[in-house]
Length: 101
Image 1 (spheres, rainbow, N blue to C red):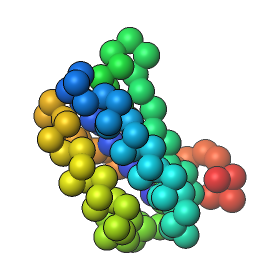
Image 2 (tube, rainbow, N blue to C red; image 1 turned 120 degrees about the vertical axis):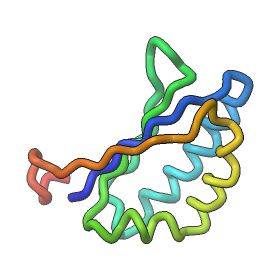
Image 3 (tube, rainbow, N blue to C red; image 1 turned 135 degrees about the vertical axis):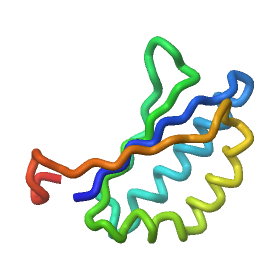
Image 4 (cartoon, rainbow, N blue to C red; image 1 turned 180 degrees about the vertical axis):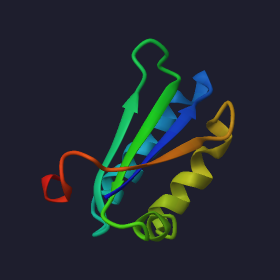
Protein backbone atom coordinates (compact mmCIF):
# COMPACT_ATOMS: atom_id res chain seq x y z
CA UNK A 1 0.00 0.00 0.00
CA UNK A 2 1.06 3.55 -0.69
CA UNK A 3 -0.28 6.13 1.75
CA UNK A 4 -0.46 9.88 1.22
CA UNK A 5 -1.56 12.45 3.79
CA UNK A 6 -2.52 15.80 2.26
CA UNK A 7 -2.63 18.79 4.63
CA UNK A 8 -4.92 21.69 3.72
CA UNK A 9 -5.62 25.01 5.42
CA UNK A 10 -8.85 26.57 4.13
CA UNK A 11 -9.98 30.21 4.24
CA UNK A 12 -12.91 30.48 6.66
CA UNK A 13 -15.31 31.90 4.09
CA UNK A 14 -14.82 28.82 1.88
CA UNK A 15 -15.11 26.03 4.45
CA UNK A 16 -18.57 24.82 3.39
CA UNK A 17 -17.71 24.94 -0.31
CA UNK A 18 -14.40 23.21 0.33
CA UNK A 19 -16.09 20.43 2.30
CA UNK A 20 -18.69 19.91 -0.42
CA UNK A 21 -16.08 19.73 -3.18
CA UNK A 22 -13.81 17.45 -1.16
CA UNK A 23 -16.59 15.04 -0.23
CA UNK A 24 -17.63 14.81 -3.88
CA UNK A 25 -14.03 14.07 -4.85
CA UNK A 26 -13.75 11.43 -2.11
CA UNK A 27 -16.99 9.70 -3.15
CA UNK A 28 -15.62 9.36 -6.66
CA UNK A 29 -12.09 8.49 -5.57
CA UNK A 30 -13.15 5.41 -3.60
CA UNK A 31 -14.62 4.05 -6.85
CA UNK A 32 -11.17 3.94 -8.45
CA UNK A 33 -9.68 0.42 -8.56
CA UNK A 34 -6.33 1.71 -7.26
CA UNK A 35 -7.82 3.41 -4.18
CA UNK A 36 -8.18 1.34 -1.00
CA UNK A 37 -9.29 4.25 1.19
CA UNK A 38 -9.90 7.99 0.82
CA UNK A 39 -10.79 9.85 4.02
CA UNK A 40 -11.56 13.55 4.45
CA UNK A 41 -10.99 14.64 8.05
CA UNK A 42 -11.33 18.04 9.72
CA UNK A 43 -9.23 19.18 12.67
CA UNK A 44 -11.32 19.38 15.87
CA UNK A 45 -9.64 22.40 17.44
CA UNK A 46 -9.12 24.33 14.18
CA UNK A 47 -11.92 23.53 11.71
CA UNK A 48 -10.16 25.41 8.90
CA UNK A 49 -7.58 22.59 8.70
CA UNK A 50 -8.21 19.35 6.87
CA UNK A 51 -6.30 16.19 6.09
CA UNK A 52 -6.96 13.85 3.20
CA UNK A 53 -5.92 10.30 4.08
CA UNK A 54 -5.36 8.53 0.77
CA UNK A 55 -4.45 4.84 0.68
CA UNK A 56 -3.50 3.46 -2.72
CA UNK A 57 -2.97 -0.13 -3.80
CA UNK A 58 0.25 0.68 -5.71
CA UNK A 59 2.86 3.40 -6.18
CA UNK A 60 1.35 4.17 -9.60
CA UNK A 61 -2.21 4.67 -8.33
CA UNK A 62 -1.71 8.25 -7.00
CA UNK A 63 -0.59 9.41 -10.45
CA UNK A 64 -3.58 7.66 -12.02
CA UNK A 65 -5.85 9.35 -9.47
CA UNK A 66 -4.47 12.78 -10.40
CA UNK A 67 -5.52 12.17 -14.02
CA UNK A 68 -9.21 11.58 -13.23
CA UNK A 69 -11.88 14.12 -14.09
CA UNK A 70 -13.13 14.28 -10.50
CA UNK A 71 -9.64 15.04 -9.13
CA UNK A 72 -9.01 17.72 -11.76
CA UNK A 73 -12.38 19.31 -10.98
CA UNK A 74 -11.60 19.24 -7.23
CA UNK A 75 -8.13 20.72 -7.76
CA UNK A 76 -9.39 23.55 -9.92
CA UNK A 77 -12.32 24.25 -7.60
CA UNK A 78 -10.47 24.38 -4.26
CA UNK A 79 -7.09 25.91 -5.08
CA UNK A 80 -8.20 29.49 -4.40
CA UNK A 81 -10.00 28.41 -1.23
CA UNK A 82 -6.72 27.58 0.49
CA UNK A 83 -4.78 29.88 2.82
CA UNK A 84 -1.55 28.36 1.48
CA UNK A 85 -0.70 25.61 -1.00
CA UNK A 86 -1.53 22.13 0.25
CA UNK A 87 1.31 19.88 1.34
CA UNK A 88 1.63 16.12 1.26
CA UNK A 89 3.63 13.45 3.01
CA UNK A 90 4.00 9.92 1.70
CA UNK A 91 4.11 6.83 3.93
CA UNK A 92 4.58 3.10 3.61
CA UNK A 93 2.21 0.72 5.34
CA UNK A 94 3.32 -1.38 8.32
CA UNK A 95 -0.02 -2.56 9.74
CA UNK A 96 -2.47 -3.91 8.82
CA UNK A 97 -0.92 -5.95 6.03
CA UNK A 98 -2.15 -5.21 2.52
CA UNK A 99 -4.96 -7.79 2.79
CA UNK A 100 -6.27 -5.90 5.86
CA UNK A 101 -7.19 -2.84 3.81
